[in-house]
Length: 202
Image (spheres, rainbow, N blue to C red):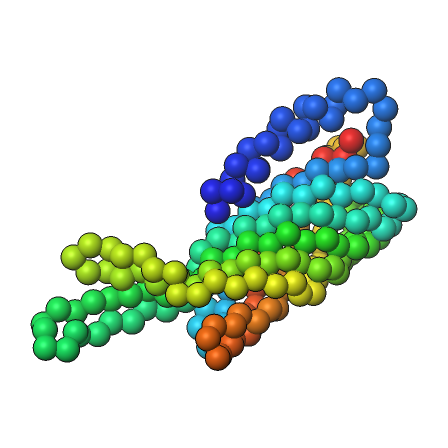
């Protein structure tokens, strides 16, 4: 999550730089914040998430988008037990941490309902996920249970509201499904992300 926040902090700098260009272009910068529900093997959790992106407008309706998303670290479930022969009880929290870089084709309608445009996108996401365990005892112990990465299809529904000629308010719902492998087993994971953000065309 720290990486996404740092990238979000760069948006004002990039926006100011873009206004200094002598001629307009078909590029746009976007940044958003939201909540991601990560679910796998019957368990689920929600985490704060952030994303930044760069898009290029090919036609009035079609564009390509390259973005980075940090879905945060969601606590999936907790467990506790007693060590054999001892009275020491431990509690552990299992969590899932996911990031991804995506390349999408996006379609949006012409402005309707005053300044609103609606659409969707589909593309490929190169994701990285870590399943972590935090053991709560006399002192906390963080353990990495498994790490995996892969490339899968992702899709989204989007809406944009024109605030000014160059600034849009963005709303969206992202969906990504992938499979984490560990030892001789695997589990399907779904990421559903709801967000709100800003887009600056320059």
